[in-house]
Length: 412
Image (cartoon, rainbow, N blue to C red; front, side, top):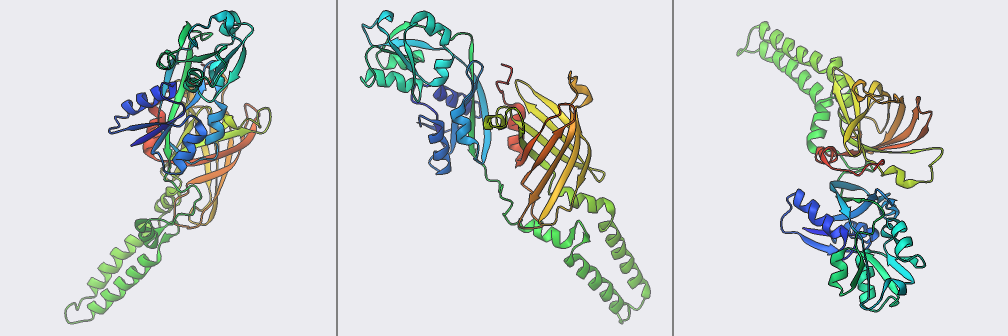
């Protein structure tokens, strides 16, 4: 398995890649430095790597814009996360003192995490962003940066490049960075993939409308056959025809019952989802908001009703909302919609009670296929917020990863 990561040898992303791979118990792994988040995502798209690790958030520097810009339009499956404590060191070429420094080069996140320390140590030095902290160390050692430039990087990267340590642990406060490992998703988010053979056969036997064409033909054929056999020498009793007809009628009534019909209606919506929302006002231009804190949803059917529960994947995964009422149009047509009203679960104990409604719609190519993507609008009654929302189906495996993973959280 080939895992690409944002950064170079000796970078924090490399350490994160090793950490997540160990947690997932991945064997026979090759690690490939790819410098930037964009390179990681492009390599995933091109099939050059099997998984990619990128930095997503820091408790001092905030979200990593480079990463979110790279993943915003991608169909990716989350494999795992880790949060690392980051320690920054200031290195220079041998013989260069603090008083000689007129510039400091590093990744923009490292610069953002050391503003106060740099103002104290090298107050006149200009901050210069480079693609990665380990790259800064390599460039300085190779003479690609001016000799009066210092770099911020991990201790291992500075020492590996023969640089001299000027100051250690210069982060302004305890620095934590969240990393996520992704791989390409194999789910058809265009809703164009044809249903499986098993789904097609099932649809021909029983569907939302009740009996499919195959089931109707078999029942009619069974009744006619029993009538024919009843008049033959082998079976000369009308009781046989009556019994067979009665049994087939019972099956017919069961398969056309409201309970079965509702089950079939909701089957293509049930399962696991993640969703992204973007408010209309205030932060509508911040695409990063879509991905800052993952939100996951489980849609279930019970007693002919849909029930929806959502979780917020923050420092700890907590239930965010539950549906109070749902309405769904026919799921066995090419177009459909789902509307639900939501509220905070009673056990959540939130200061502000969430409430509102969501309206989602979909278009799919094959009526019998499941719905994998829905999009629409939401309106929060308590928050008076409106915006766009997108639901994407995920596997139970990815759902469990979200529930078990460690995220940095917006309030870190």
